Amino acid sequence: MPYKPLIPSVRGPGLFAVLGGLLVGGCNADADVPSPTRPQAVATVTVKLEPAERGWSYVGTVKPRYQSDVGFRVGGKIIARSVEVGSWTKKGDVIARLDPSDFELALAAQDAELAAAKVSRDETAAALERFRVLFRDGHVSRSALDQRQSAAAEAQSRVDRAERNVELARNQLAYTTLVSDSDGIVTALPVEVGQVIAAGQLIARVARRDAVEVEVALPEQDVAAVREAAAEAELWGNGSRFSATLREIAPDAEPVSRTFRARFALTNMGEIAPDFGRTATLHLKTKSAGSVAALPLSAIANENGRPVAWVVADDGQHAVARPVMVHAYDQDKVLVSAGLNAGDRVVALGVHMLDADKPIRPIEARALVSQK
Image 1 (cartoon, rainbow, N blue to C red):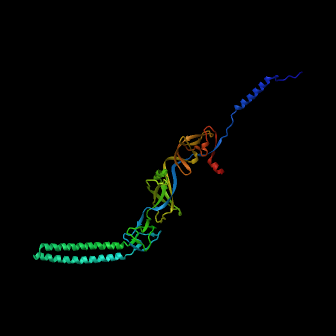
Image 2: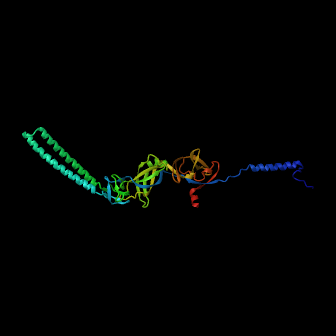
């Protein structure tokens, strides 16, 4: 029996038409199959709501609140100096002395003037008594008695003036000894023994130890928060911590640094002697109503001028941008006060590469840390 092919014989142009149709059909079939997209691995953190508490710190300097520039109330030559820079003084301690010779002579002269005035006063008083007797007996006129009364009053005035001059000379002699008017530490001493100084010239600068403060520079954005914060100061070197109270904030900013100078008073130093100029760290903490979620700074993106966080969707394979409200920025984290719920999984890294239509593969941030 002769062989018969199952496929009809096609010759000429018909064969090329059939082959072309098969090729075109095969290409269209491949185009209808979508290519798979690999999920993007992202690091996520789970939201935990905590009381809205912010803590931060500044480095400052220990300074006295009161610092007095003391000097002699009279001029003269310094013959002794009892302190040095850094010396601790108590109220009444001698700081320096002037040559008292001229003041002693002035006091002696005023004493002599007072003695002479008292003698003259006694003579005029005795004469006045005699004239009163003579006037009563009719031997002198009224005008003569009035003259004696005026002379006695003038003599008494000279005594009073001499007594004031003696007191003034005695005070000036006492002013030749300069004493400290408070407990403190000598921070400046610009004079030496043998130097002739004028009245009121700076002899020593004494910083009082009963009012100690820490001075810090505040950034402009933190001024409002600092007013409401609780403060604590830590002195470098010994690790001691003391309660601090905000006393003042400068009304204008420094022209170069654009920071505001603030002073915090230390309230419980007790008998500890502060070293002025020592470095201190001022720790601040503030609380507010509500709760916040602490997230890495890299978890917050900016879209259309508003902060957003990318939250893993319920299917666990996509992320959705959700607007949030930022409570505060810290050194390494951001505090979000609204827009997130406890238990939400937030993308912590690579938020700038996310797309709501692209699949993701969430990885807990703790797992990433453990792999390092």
